[in-house]
Image 1 (cartoon, rainbow, N blue to C red):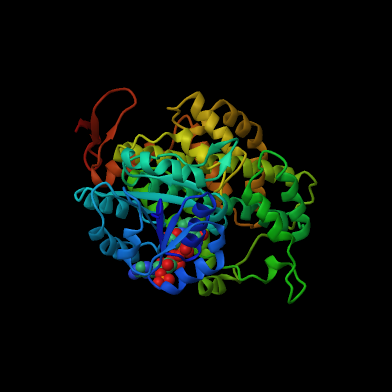
Image 2 (spheres, protein in one colour; image 1 turned 45 degrees about the vertical axis):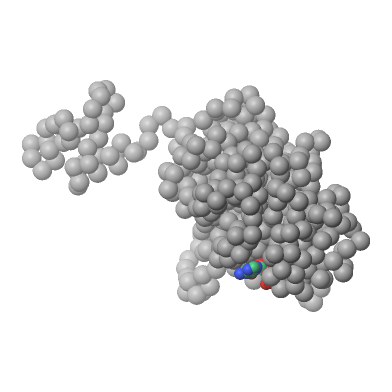
Length: 473
Ligand code: NBP
């Protein structure tokens, strides 16, 4: 018997993905560099379906039906190249290597081009949902050729999460498109988490609520428009009591957030593409600030504001509005980045389809994504989600409360970089005139960089060091 698909790399993600495939009735070949993992998988979960364990790459490749579908779930970076170097010589034209790791999309483009020359499809595939998602149905974002999707799509759709019967898996676009979209997904996840963290911080330190009371607030929010996996688990974490000390769990965890890199890549890529993603950038920086222990220690004695907490019973509602509005901004920025990446690399990504496949399986799954899907359905070329009728109205309704929350945060000295940057972005887009005109004047003054005028075409320069007449550049 041959396997329909194979998975190499059997740490948490690969093991659970292989189990998911087997549970769906697909015979799956399994392989790992260290064969103890392969043995352990078959011993423990062999009853869940048909596993074909292989100790060597050669046996692994032999056990796959053609065209071969080989999923690689190893640590991203060097290990992925090592695995490709090991397996590619064993493959034949038409075979597919599916990289399900969190690869950088630029690496995926390089690998895809190199393997395409040898007739092998390289399918960089974003997989979201962590280990639980991999087992029970992740959100899957495959890139690579349309031809490879014909052979892979049905399998991947089968094991993906489903929402309203629709699989959370779609062919994103050629070469690195899948990993690009997965990267931005993670960037949005950073922003979403940061906004939730700021909401908690304000409820705690501006409104003076206790963690279990805040958990209740989040539970209530989770029955409304903010309903999402992240809000749900936030309530769980906040309600949790540390077993060892009996104190709120959130008070015994070291307040230094870590990161693996996809958020940073999202921001670096946005800078390269010239797309403003302040919400994601502030989220990455907030984690970075939290980790600078010595810097924070040195600055701890700096003076703060003299005013105390707010005693406003409507504050939690205001924070809900600020959170919703800021979240819309963060997603609008993320989708702008996907739109720009798609244009830059010729991927032709369907933005509404991305919202559709993020509705289930992944960390940012939320009711809200249905709204984004609807927005792109109404206007696939909308320049920003913010001008969609629904979102424009929601932000319009929320904005007074949003401004109040940002002002309160500033007044009380509670850092709210996510809320603040989102509001500044909103106001920048809305502005009739931006002070960029002054910036251009300064640039022309010190560097003769020229400027354009509102009333005439062309580039101009003022002779700042001379008689200040204007010349055509
Ligand atoms: P890890 O990222 O911890 O990688 C461990 C696996 O890589 C093991 O199977 C290990 O084999 C293998 N490996 C390494 Br390390 N170097 C290798 C090499 N030179 N040649 C062959 N194999 C090598 O596993 P993971 O947490 O399951 O994640 C797998 C991928 O999925 C990663 O790219 C990750 O970014 C991505 N991802 C993870 C999550 C998540 O929630 N964890 C979510 C979404 C995506 P060994 O057993 O012989 O050491």
